[in-house]
Image (cartoon, rainbow, N blue to C red; front, top):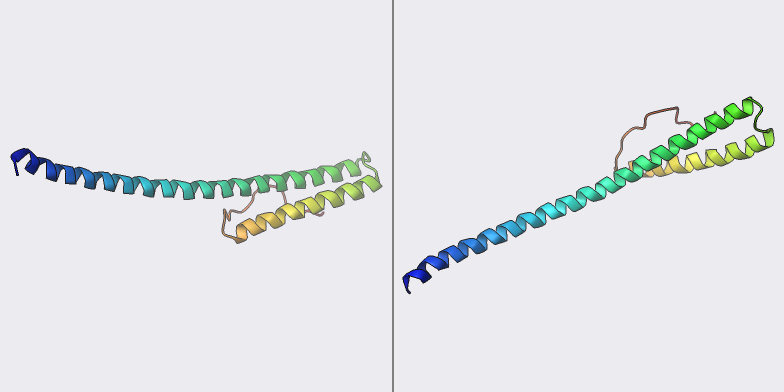
Length: 117
């Protein structure tokens, strides 16, 4: 073998090893970013559910206040209260199922979490 071939062969082997190592690290990084983006989407879903729960509970509180002020009839109050309580319970069940699966099990903050008063 001549001198250029003796020099190029080890250099090419080192370049090939470096390329394989770089591709391996890139694939590992890509996998980590995909799994963290999935977790982030699940966290966003949980946050949206918690926001919806708070909105429904505030709506119930406002409805009770409006009824006490005489702005909502007894009949309308009963129907609306039942509807918003059902919706709040549905959302709370979905939050519980998210937290039961270990996804974003963070406590909620804000007004009381009971749907009925």
